[in-house]
Length: 112
Image 1 (spheres, one colour):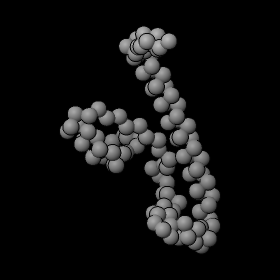
Image 2 (cartoon, one colour; image 1 turned 180 degrees about the vertical axis):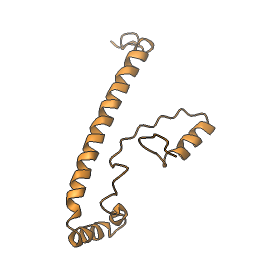
Image 3 (cartoon, helix red, strand yellow; image 1 turned 60 degrees about the vertical axis):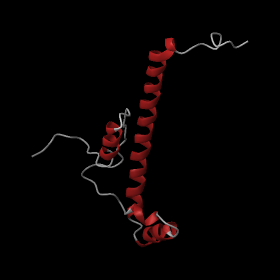
Image 4 (cartoon, rainbow, N blue to C red; image 1 turned 90 degrees about the vertical axis):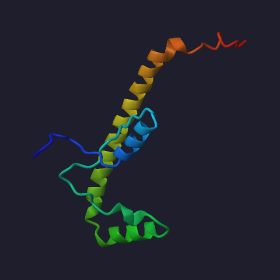
């Protein structure tokens, strides 16, 4: 049965649950860098650890055809980063408008 969801976030539920239990407000905003119908071009865990770069580069040398997929994914990541930046700029601007009257001005704080 299809849910109609356009994305699924499996990683953040535990953090949200923990925040809820202790009464801490929680907001999660994520950008998706890969499509549901696409596999990641490689196992990025290869890059982890002290020899990660060597293993990652060796993998690319053995399979240079994945470089095109990595470049496409890079474009998706950049697009997602730009969208996150726009979202947070709008969020901060809306918070500034909402909280501005409650914030004391420098003059009210005794600045001379």
